[in-house]
Length: 152
Image (cartoon, rainbow, N blue to C red; front, side, top):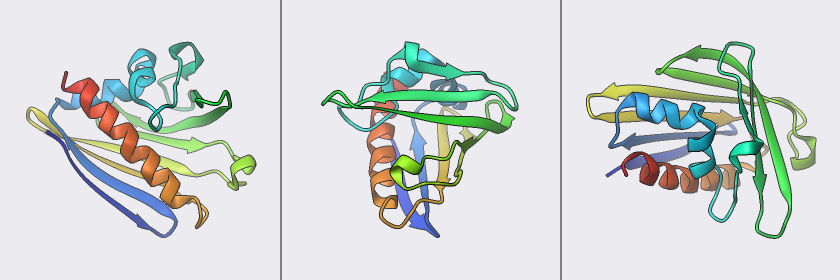
């Protein structure tokens, strides 16, 4: 079972979700390329493990390429700016002018230990006004896949 509370404020997406899995397993799903390939991205989007780079250290790169069903691809790249395994992962995105984001954004993921469960809080943004809903829908779909992966 997992619970999710999405909200959007000030151009940022904020989602809190509780997973029926220990914190270390949830954190590993964010940092292991094979696990990321299994859940990252919205439905019907593939993220091949060989197109994922996670250099898990301060200043390291975190990069994924999503492949759309129609053949398009989209790469998102980040710099790791804060890291406290298995409690915190903070990433600063590369600018993405092709999707209306000419400036960097910040993705912050906190992992709170609740015994056999984990409360994960994600904040991501800021997004342009017309991009927030899509980002929230994408994260929500991805977290449904993540829940299935880590509780299996």
